[in-house]
Length: 272
Image 1 (cartoon, rainbow, N blue to C red):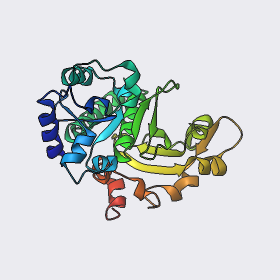
Image 2: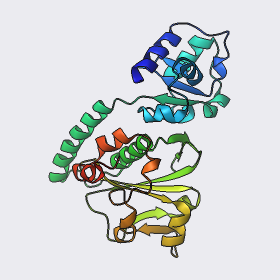
Image 3: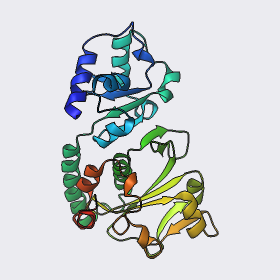
Image 4: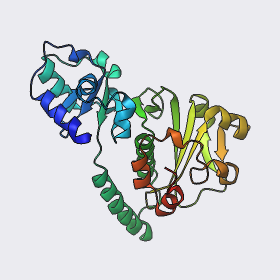
């Protein structure tokens, strides 16, 4: 399916479409190259198997608002295709799908893991929060088919699922959780519909996932103060490794298995 879409993007990009209505499309799909795109409606017309956004997500594509990506490649392509500049006011109304090179990313994760291990053992790196957090968020975006949207919030972006439900994503990095539990700002949970916690091992692979309703988190685990602490002992029954309650929320099952740690993958084996 990916190759068919890549062919369509190449075909569409080979000609200009200044007199068409495609310049008003809200969704575009990137092809094999960053200078090739195709409107989603064009794909729906040419490939009957692709009916909804979910069909793209299930085939391994990920998407973000253009405002979040802000890529000049698309701006230049849009100008060449439609003989008009992409207006700033249109940034927030356009979504871009692309197909990540998972093999390259997987290979990079393995290299990073080895290099981080060296730097840890030589006491060069003591705090590596940034990379694990961003990688964990990318895992969740890919696995659950979330859209990443630029906002004016402190974090700078938000995640939304296919039903436009706001998702709070929290990354817990390390081979073991803190005895105090995973700390999440209560205000962020209150502003979201769902809360996902991804546990990323020091190998940079996923060791478990929690998928919870935010109202449930506030009702069951909230206490005085500005934060909620999710202790492993309190949420153990909700882990993906033990419960299949939210398996239906997984859009990209292959990616979940690909980036799962060996132990986590064994527990998930046969459940999908």
